[in-house]
Length: 339
Image 1 (cartoon, helix red, strand yellow):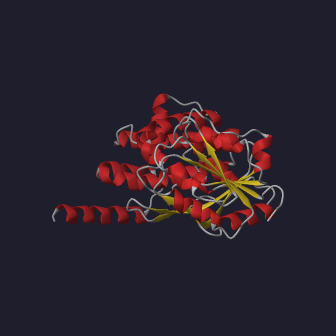
Image 2: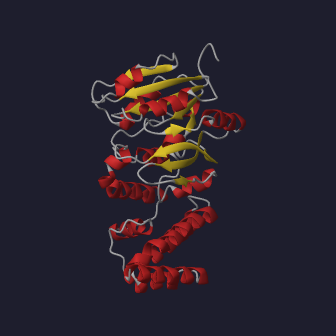
């Protein structure tokens, strides 16, 4: 272990997570990689979170206490002011890290000096959900995907501290939810992204999580970020086209209809055509991501009936597999209704 600065600074804000924070801390203290400092920012918790943290005597644990609740972004920024490691590893206080997470991310960044931020796939658990969230691994694909949604796993990333501090890449404290997406969009011109395919992070779906607490604001968050990312692309768009963009990712502020499907398809062709002209993103990569988004919309159209689903198929690349899938879905719905 280094006698001077640690190799990694782990940064973990915490607010009212008494029930889970012990698991989060244990998963980091039990890492196979040992050379780190563990900065825990208690954001004026009103439960037993701080007491739970104070029980740990490991000298690597450093506790910062906010006198007033400052929210996640401000807590992260406070931690960034004091990190000493070559790398900064994020961790959320209700999640769990794989024992080899730090080692594998450290090794990857050491071997790839051009990469500034690296995350990994995540296993999702809790609230009746068991799944794996995978992320794109190539920088240009990750950046092109930001037009649609957050494309890096916030709690799972490790960042090159020199890059973060050199460019003063701090979090936007005006965002109460979606800080990650806003952050990736703010830093994308200064960093190179990557993700490991192996799930090294276990993301807990629970009522107290930030995302769940502010789920009612998700639509607003998407509207703000989609407006920002479309403006960043430079494409002219109306308020209605912004809603069509959200429609494609499954936010149905505009009611699903045959007309909406046709308008949404025209919109996605417009942005592909625009990027092909201005080359803000690699055209082939941008089109691939856009078409992936359009393809995923098919499954969201199924519950809205035959005419809407068929209108989707008419404007999309003809696919027998999609027609067969729809017929199976329809048959299953009929069987279910007759039970």
